[in-house]
Length: 168
View 1 (spheres, one colour):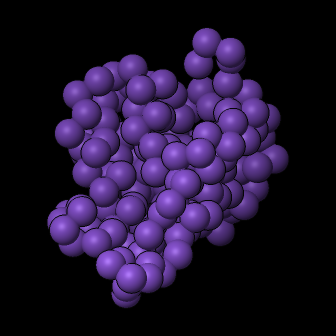
View 2: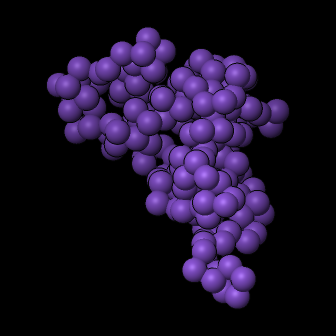
């Protein structure tokens, strides 16, 4: 990892693709160097994300979980980390909170189109900045009014960071 920081992300991709665990010492080394991932050009990070997204939604979801476990995700897509603690009302999304909902959406995606899988990943990213405890009929429940509009702004920020092309 000292020679090429991208190897940390590749290890996660190979682990997801081959359905194998990363060796404990290798994982420990990746965690200790996770913040170094931002020293890479974001074009290389994007390429690695796209390679993982091309594996299909299910494996992409596993890949993202591995990146999260290795403490890498918080450095390349920090907007997603807050989603892990954002709840959904059981009547709206019985599968669980926003992060779980997002992972479940990827798991049922059979596309290998990286842009589509990235869109699935980011479809609720605006909920991280619009969360409010509801009142009246929604009293005691988390609401996310305007999350689609705020999500567009966040996706644009992420797209610029990852150097996505206009077509992407």
